[in-house]
Image (tube, rainbow, N blue to C red; front, side, top):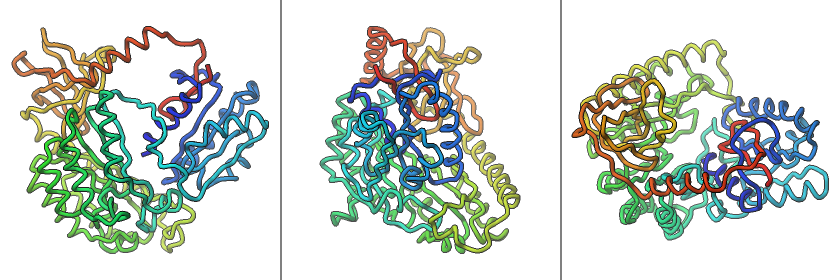
Length: 477
């Protein structure tokens, strides 16, 4: 979601006359931080990076620094107190105001702070500068109606707002017309989509409608909530050919007691039942998850419950987090906040278990033939392995080589290859013969060719930018 917001920020700034800069020697005219507030280390990284930029700002006072996103929505005036050299602070509800705020700060020669409490313009109406020619993000909703005790997102993003299906499908069709062959539908809780306009089956219907869009090869979505995940969505996934056999289903904890304390309105039995239904209808589905370790009051028995569910779930991969105390959330006020050493030790046990499962599940893929959407072009091949990279239909990372005499694919092309090796976090394909290897050229690959030609034709300016964790940072022409 934040990557997609950053693409919108880049699109807005380019539309206002700025140009994107790719390198980081410290002389960009505008630097934008798009922030997250889910974990404490995001705060630390922001203020650390702002501190480094203060020295650049002293030498180049005309440079502008803007901070937006969830941390800006949360901290507001605190950012300007801690870093008075920041020029603009804007929130999650007024992304579209950034160019005007930069201009106002420059004209008035003073910092601009604008934080709205409700959405000003639905983000998908804003211009977007995509990072990928072959893949695109499409927001189907913003905000969240859940009340998880550890999560600050609803307070910063607001209540859920749903887009109408026609608007979503029109945006997808426009992306496909522009060369995109893969879209990911985004929402804080995608399977509650439609509640706002009175259709609780709307998400399954939307997936099926995506299956009717000619030229759309791959459809993904993130993230669903186990409490609202219904059989009609599983059936739509299984019956719609371009909906990929991959599901991200956040577990958070395998302990029913901890789930109750988290206000996650499902229990481990229901969670495992969903996974069983998915695998019954989609046998080769790769399921991934999110897990929090060290939630307040978590006992060793509770943690063992998480390990047991992870062992039973056989996740293809997992995002594992140590609980982060976020001011303003109910969990921050709970007793029995765990010592750091206890949380760290449990975290290491969990990651060791999941790493083992990842390796075992990937080893089961050896011998299968997979279709890979190429994401890395030949100019960036490893000098040691000469392999390219891409994602299989179930979203596993695949490093593959081109056999002698084989056609070298472009980003956005689709290759069919055998899996010949595996590791915990990727698959390997080294086809022995041309018969084992095929390339399907795509419109996305054609779009990549055009983008390279345009880049070579226009050249670049001598101005470069600062790269501090954004997809790209623009500098004025």
